[in-house]
Image 1 (cartoon, helix red, strand yellow):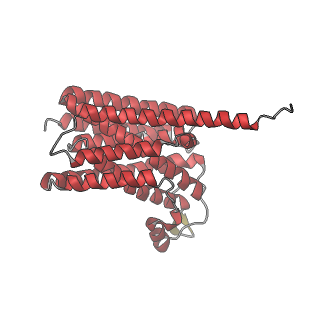
Image 2 (spheres, one colour; image 1 turned 180 degrees about the vertical axis):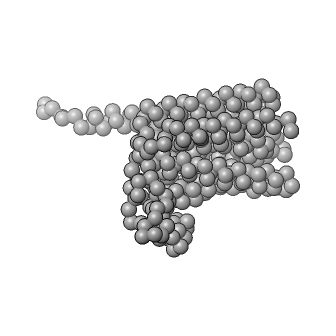
Amino acid sequence: MADLPLWLGFNVIVLAMLALDLGVLHRKAHAVSLKEAALWSAVWIVLSIIFGSIVYVSRGADSGLQFFSGYLIEKALSVDNIFVFVLIFAYFQVARQYQHRVLFWGIIGALIMRGAMILIGAALIERFHWIMYLFGLFLVYTAFRLATNRAEKVDPSHNPAVRLARRFLPVTDHYIGQSFLARQAGRLVATPLLLVLLVIETTDLVFALDSIPAVFAISQDPFIVYTSNVFAILGLRALYFLVAGMLQRLEYLQYGLSIILGFVGIKMLIQDIYKVPTTLSLTFIVVVLSIVVAASLINRKRNQVRHQAQSLPVEDA
């Protein structure tokens, strides 16, 4: 019961921000500008820092550091979601002004699904400690797969949710504004936007299978795992509109995420022999992300300079 004020405060913040987002600021569909995306990204980051600081003061330094470590891991892994979102929106040819609405409801569904998965995971870990070793092995395997297979093919037409929806729901062949459902000739029909939402939801469910065990490696406290997940997810929409066009510049990010997943997987496997300090975990995550981002930008700049040099006309002697 000691955490009840924090739980209540957290949920009040989330509900208030979601109501403000959809009910006031995005009542009418519009293309999210770079300035608006940057502002909302900053808002969510600041709120996360404030909440993490409150956790640090009220629950102790270790809990605060666990929150920030979990938040950074989830934030970094969510970049993979953005790669896939770009492909999904391009495949279904979703207009920019409708993308925010899809992501909003997709994230609402993600919060519910992840909350259920975290509660189940926490209950299983509490009852069957050996499950932590399965999580650890799974993360190490995922890290290896991520490092050795960069190009994952995403074909929304093969998505099980889309196939199921097409089988049981009549789907229009065109978009009807920002509606997921509409009435035609007196019957309820789905629009392609609903299919996009289903793909987004099922894709996030797949990504959650990697990210949630990774945060459990940092903390087994459901409060820390859930709140760090939620804050990272809530900032995902703004992050998408902010960096979707720049993702190709971060060519080494995949390897950085692989290193981080491998690290937290090994941390899980050795926890009964040696408990890695939370400060070391947080430092490691920050250093790895900083190195891969800097290396990606430096290499891109070097390639641009080399390309410009090669394109210059050669003067005859």
